[in-house]
Image (tube, rainbow, N blue to C red; front, side, top):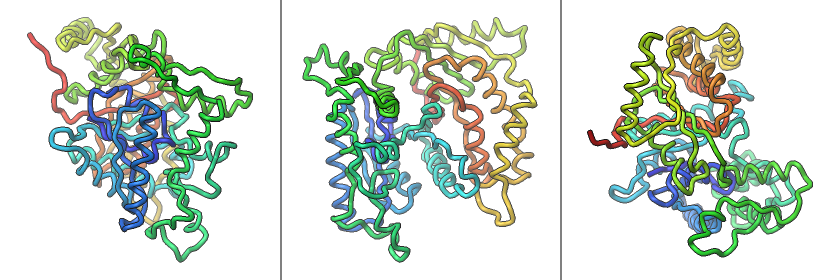
Length: 431
């Protein structure tokens, strides 16, 4: 079962579509939305309205998911509430999935509070003992809020936050804080739902026709433009909206299984190969760390036998013997330049990087930079990369350093899913 932190799902349809490809109605998918206001009677009315809109959006888009909405001024606290309260009995999420923060580094140290919030959500997932997944949609990202607002299909007339809630009245007055709920006249909670719907109605995306059960799966992955799209930006937006709803023929999934996490890193690509997923029948390549060159053949034979017990037959199995090699000087220099904007100054801001941190975690940095090099060499042509997620450490690894590791490993790659299970076995086999 997956708890997917989406915010407004209409702003991140590709993220929802990807998670839906994994489960496809066979298990619980909950889309969590933290509305950034203090709980009171008006915000409760807002959450009820958003709940109805999300359910309607899921139905229209053929998404098998449930909404879960809380009001909380702090995003990390709200996410923790969702993680604790979502589900009933054993039908509770055991995987927390979030989208990767795109372009997080552009504002440097001034963006550290947002990084700390994102990092706190990941930490809370590990402390709750659930699997944690971070999905990066190449360098494109997921949030279409700004693009929908700038386009001619926008229906929101003023500044909105990334969740699609109109915050303009609060930006205009310093005396009014976001802890106060929006008035009924200015609230645009459903703005992005209407934007996406109007984008479809305008003829840029085909409506899903009424079909019988046999044709339903086929039509889910069919994109038939009603009119030629002259505007390149709109064409790119369509591609983003439908990226994980369009079946990839002869696809390739690269799995970098670097640590034993109970088998979750292997289970998810297996599910994405099954009928109905956008990567149905994809070629599965598994990369695992190995020993020295003289042991490669034995390691490969042992791993192939293990995968066979799990009824997983990878097309290719690669044992990497050069994982312990030092990264190149070029990538080390690039990493140093990258983290320089996140160095801690006299203010001692939490989350920024100290020189002691770089020295303490030098071996980890070298390992992740080397993994990034190997990914660039082997997986740039894959359709999906699944990679073991590094474990964060509260009060030890700064958020900026942790995000820098993820950035250096996944940049310039196809869609990449970082995943780390809770060591509970999710695969069964029989001798």
